[in-house]
Length: 313
Image 1 (tube, rainbow, N blue to C red):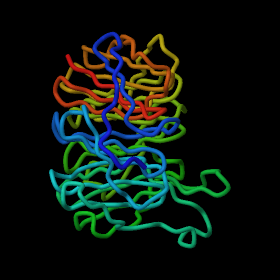
Image 2 (cartoon, rainbow, N blue to C red; image 1 turned 120 degrees about the vertical axis):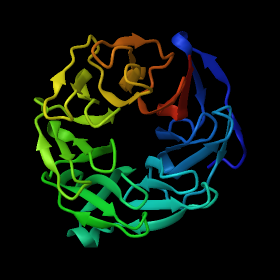
Image 3 (cartoon, one colour; image 1 turned 90 degrees about the horizontal axis):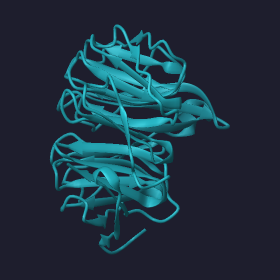
Image 4 (tube, rainbow, N blue to C red; image 1 turned 45 degrees about the horizontal axis):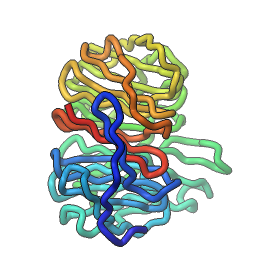
């Protein structure tokens, strides 16, 4: 764990992406989250968490009491945030100055199986959701879906209509939300998470991430270059053909038309027509890229070997 402010040397790539190393060498950065164009966090292997207040020029490590990889960072507002690491949920109520463990899901609660938590989102100030998997001897045996109704103070389990691994959750508003995962699974709610139903993705590819600009328009991405598009809230999903076969791990839009997708081997794709067509951009790295976040005309992507890429139009 670093103990000093990190000032990373940068290398300019084409298409406006600048590569820097923020995390420890030979360790992955898995997730990135920004509150605005200045203040953000990155998280990765070994419980590594760092914060920037200058848009990513410098980073200050923050302590989270875990040796596990941080899989997701999410702030409900400017003060209250959440981190998922292994089988535990951590929270801060002072803008990330201090992080404390809220809940840990132990093997004895799951007949000796291990829990891994991947994604956390809130649909309102009080209601939040976490998805992940339950596994024995590295084989997934069940999904896990957790919810809170008290702003993250307590978490309870809800049975999902699938035992497949659930990887990412997203809400368009306080009623409409979606979950994606292995086997092409897409689950949707129209009642704020009271119930979840399966949607037909017309694929068995693992879906790693999705982004909705409204309750109707969404894009999902996954393995082997899978891109799915919906304009009716997921009642129908259409496969978008692209040249790249790289597995895509994250997607984010800045407006109704402009968005990016990132993935393995440094893959970065861009669309300017609401996801109908995608053009590959030069990232300047062959490291896998796992997390992506965009604020207006600035973007950040994180990946292997402590890598952070910054983009500015």
